[in-house]
Amino acid sequence: MTITDRLPSVRESFHKIASFVVAGKDARKELVERLLRHHSSLAELISSQPTDRKAISRDDVPLTVFCAVLKELAHRYGRSLLPEGNLLEQPELLKDYLMVQMARERVEQFRLLFLDDRKHLIRDEVQSHGTINHVSVYPREIAKRCLALGAAGIIMVHNHPGGQVNPSRGDITMTQAIQKALAVIDVCLIDHVIITRKTQTSFRQLGLLDDD
Image (cartoon, rainbow, N blue to C red):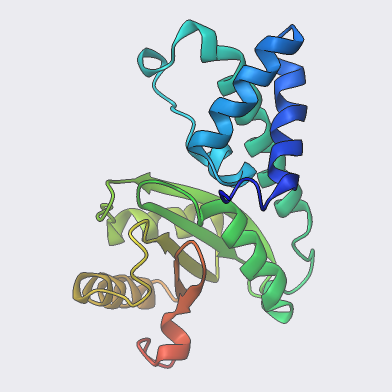
């Protein structure tokens, strides 16, 4: 018995997708079986679709477009669930949001949440994308963006596609450099969160941030 045999909901989800992207019963059945051979969940299917047009075959364009739409809808839905008030008062909602946004990214992504002095979210921005184990971050650019948005504090977030939950020495050094740069302009580094597919790690909870 395969994993897909134990997960009928996955097969059902793939059937629904196939009904949107291909015509004909036989073609839909063939697509479902192909998806089940290569993907164990709907989330894995959506996150694994290529973004480079050259890597997409003509037959797979409808599937890729449909998955991109589903991914964008999931991200927007997650964003809508964030509290409109103090973002730190409901940490579980923030945690869920970050997992939806970043847990299945295949390369490292560096994200900033800009907050005002009441801890209300001003802007959520992806600053850069990197490789499987590295992303470039520039303290000066982060400070400039904080000034442009009038942010009083930020939450930094990046993912570890390889699954390493603990911060690397480079992560710690980079975070300390950014905290020092932000202190000059009176912006608080509220936290730095690392995301993996299954969990999160908080620099604040690990005691890796200086007290303000």
